[in-house]
Image (tube, rainbow, N blue to C red):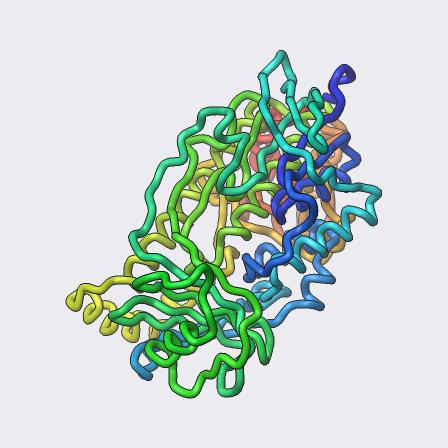
Length: 487
């Protein structure tokens, strides 16, 4: 529950996309919160680009999807090409989502959209405010900040680190950031382009000298990411970008102008645990991996989505310890899988071994031609296939759930939804209403046209889905589930 002798309920360190989204969700739920950022303003560079369908669904449930959809360049296919030969062309149009595309939105615009939403909810960001140190107290965290160069001391019930790959909070906690670094140096360049570079297709080009990928930002602006053998200048120049395009991309793509460029190294790292006491880590503070696949920011945003409703219920006196513990238990397997998949993809695309390259170039066309493989790739890339099977607070696979009643920012906040089919008996409907009374602050019963019984969590995942013929036993299982995590 709210701790009256603390300055705030949730202190968020870092105002990148993950921290800003966390702040928006705290504001939407009416929590006491504060967000601090060491920088003097929001990002000026494009950085992360891709926003995938599940993240757009999450934004929809949070009531902030519209500006992202309106400003996005929509990508609807992924192509793999080498030496002018197409190895695979995968349509990206998931049929079971209202957002059947990859939304390309530069990170500076993503941060601006989230900051605008936060302002509309009466919030603001404390810029030029650095995290210095934290000490775990009894039921709270004592935090030392440096605001505009002056020391400031804050007490908070929960501290959430969203301060990026070089997280000062993570270092202060002494948490290891396990993993490694790829040997290759990479360059990133946002360029103005001429036809025939498509605006709705993500292009990946494996090559014996290193991989190259082209991410369309609009019809005339594209991002090029490629490995480089040596660095001759402080930042990549236009001639280098054009040379890499000539060497590894399909012919005829011209880099007409350079908007922004940078060199970087790729790491694959993650913390062993996302929680220490009342401090939680999310986003790049907890995990980083290759940009091939573009899932870093999306994974971080969904860290925040998984965490915030659990903090909300607990702060309001309804969440159990099992509920808070489930953040680490649910997100760690997802993070482990994302880091592992992107590591395999990066190594396959970057391999200079002729045997590996030959096997890769033979296997990709065979696999990509199978509908089952295409579906699996889209589910993986879109993050629509994420579920929480194995979590201690669900029964079954816990897949995502979305219907129109959950959309728009008001349909689901921090209440579980007990969905009851109209085909169920009057006695079952009455029992469901009694259950709602037992959990009156956290459970809502909705009677709909669907069949059977299901329990939807506040983050739009199914905690329980009944089987045909289940009746009172389904309600008993749901009651047991709720007792474990809420009161």
